[in-house]
Image (cartoon, rainbow, N blue to C red; front, side, top):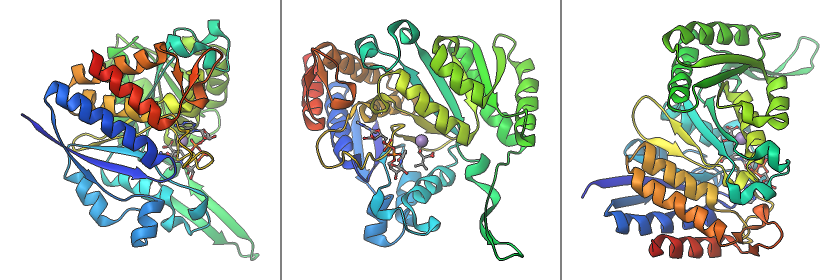
Length: 361
Ligand code: NAD
Ligand code: IPM
Ligand code: MN
């Protein structure tokens, strides 16, 4: 039996609550499909700051590097919001992405028929939406230099961040996006701000040049402001979207709402080799943490993505996805996806109904 070593990073806020559900789900499918998981937990974010004084302890990065895949829940919270930048939970997450070389972040936004009424948009606008946002994850304004708060000659403070991309950084994410589009609807929309930013002009030029290698993919370009509008106006025009770190962060939250709730969206962060990190698109939801109200499905679907992409267990992944559809068919909903006629349940109870759905089939 193949042994899969998985590092679990529950993190902060609702993180431990949704992680507990995902682990139960993995153990159940593990038994059914005879997969041997070896779970090891590690600290990240606020939990790591409290225990060790730093948001990404060296031991955590080492454990992640030494595993087949990493399942992360979420980091952050009010308690750590006033710490200096290098000590913030978010810096730990960025360090993890950079440390593992995870330049490609795949964020699928699919509307499930069961959740159409949970979307804030009209049925005919969202029915059939199936978008893949390919977000560049280790470059752009998140990592560009110089950065910091400096003092001008006049003694005034000046905050600086730099949006920068090299050609090779654009090319490698571009290739992932074209290859992703090839496996999907063969349509790729590249989103930038080339009308204003030089870095975006380079982005557009490189993506356009790459298109020659993928003649079967129809490439289009949109400015990010228009793309945000189009995502809400007519989301079905999109198949695969490729964009930079910051634009991808913003557009993927917008895409999330098409599907009913950000509590439904999984993601995969991948590099050229080594462990991928699988995590929900949402954050630690401090406003509902500790209340058993979180939707664990984005976390559970992230575990399914992990089984499919890194552990090459498509049947086990599908089994989890089927169980999610089944509990939704049965009418079970957490508060964020609740609609009339459904049964409102908490995070832990959602885990329990998932386990019975998984065990029945
Ligand atoms: P958030 O995604 O945590 O929450 C936004 C809203 O969505 C909140 O009202 C929250 O209750 C709701 N929500 C999110 N996930 C949910 C779920 N699974 N079930 C039900 N409702 C859910 O974003 P925020 O409030 O802007 O950020 C909170 C903290 O999380 C910050 O510290 C931020 O830096 C961090 N954050 C972390 C990640 C990550 O770990 N990848 C991602 C985004 C934000
Ligand atoms: C996300 C989050 C992170 C990001 C933060 C917490 C660093 O918003 O994963 O989408 O901006 O990438
Ligand atoms: Mn985000």
